[in-house]
Length: 121
Image (cartoon, rainbow, N blue to C red; front, side, top):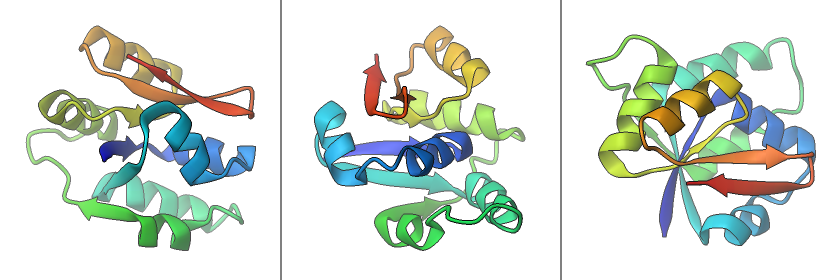
């Protein structure tokens, strides 16, 4: 089973696309264990106050919540650190984060045209 870090905009894009989480992940990485860091959960929780339909209960029941890495202060840098340390891809559509992940030798999973997921390794 592969572990996948979830970024806020990646989760929002996945939900917006209407893709089935299991089958979409299965097509790119196999059975996935989702990992959500505290900072991402806080961002999603804050966002849910103004945006409906984020399926946070689904994410909560289907993922493992972990503490933020104490060495970093910015969410993107936390995701990069964890991705690099553990070889976990990051679910994201954030262009700057994808660039930083690539520069760091990390993989990411992106939502493509609201129709499918793609692993960039």
